[in-house]
Amino acid sequence: MLKFIIPSLFGVIIFLMPVRDADNNFNIPLGVITEFFIDLFSSFLPFVITLVIILSTVLSVIAYFFKPKFITSSRMLSSMFNTSFFWLVIRVIGMAAVIMTHYQVGLRVVYSDSTGGTMMGLLTTLIMWFLVASFLMPYLINFGIMEFTGTLLRSVIRPLFTLPGRSAIDLLASWIGNVNVGVVLTREQYNTGFYTGREAVAIATNFSTVSLPFCLVIARMLEVDHIFPIFYLTIVIAGIICAMIIPRIPPVSRIPDAFHVENHYTEVVPKNKSKIAWALEQAVKRAEKSGSLKTQLKQGYEVFVDISFVLIPQVMAIGTIALIIAEYTSFFTIISQPMVYVLEFLRIPEAQAAAPATITGFIDMFIPAVLASGIETEITRFFIGALSLVQIIYLTEMATLIIISKMPANFWDLLIIFIQRTIISMPIIAIIAHIIY
Image (cartoon, rainbow, N blue to C red; front, side):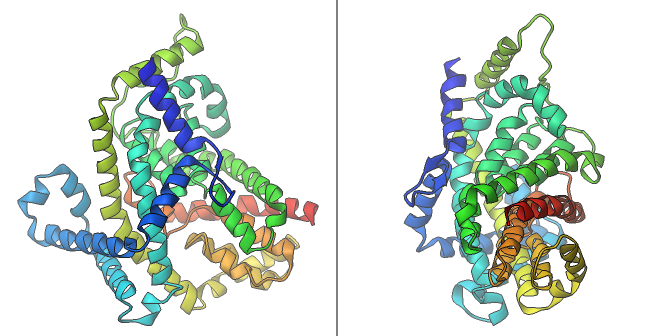
């Protein structure tokens, strides 16, 4: 019982408890710890990122062409470096981009502050989030708290979101914490057979929102922070409505309810047991199987190394390419023209200027705010800011993490889900904006 209660309580506090950070902003302990380490190691994190990407790419090239025994005979090394030709090319592009950016050589369009420089800054933050979260995540998933809440909340979570009750903790951690932590948490639950493919994709694409502090950053950037509680409430309302609809429509609804690995866990309460008694029994059983501290550290190490060597090179490549397209071409201005008519229909002022910001969120969550910061009308800035934080499917981090995971969602699925989230949330945000303004 103590093995269930103490580590689980620690995990809930780290991932879910709201606190105020050094700047008096709301955060969670995981965020405070991560930001401390980012500040501490900021001077050499760019070098670490560069080294990780170079090592990943070189070992992937060696594995692809020469298939050495030390890689093929190791389950962990094989999963990281045995890759398809497409992803090998992506890693090579990522290596070229990070070398140009770190050493400020080559093509300026690649290493400029708005392209490669932005990605380097993002990845230095990302690697520390992954490091801290990977080693602390076992306390949230291995000691029974998800089994306990799953049994108790199944009757609420299942009808609302078509998801298992145990996802309640995942949903909260994904919503409150860092977006990448939410995706990794969901990925680990899918890989160990606690979620079906459909459930994992539904959770990752609907609840992996940006953190509360980042919402405040966007609000300040767009000068709507004076009504931040209403701004954030708008995001929550639109996000919950999206989360109720999207799992019930294609492409998510068409993903098979099949488990990645066999797992005999069940949330159904036997007739001769009370709900609380069964919840405790399931939680204690899970805690008994959790293993020693060494087991938790090993799991954290494997998750961190796998994500670092697989995700970071690919995020660098995809993010840099996407930012070059957004920054140096008129591609998004051209394809966003139909959105001008939608915004005019919703009576959003400065529709022509705002239209590109409605779709560039698929590339990165920061670009819409950058594009909208020059718009004069506050209602339009409010609308774009809230929309960009509800869309949540973006290639520079979250979408790429899903694509390279074992979760059954590809690039086109994520693009469709991004469009669905945009279509569903636009009228909701517009109505709230018109009520306020």
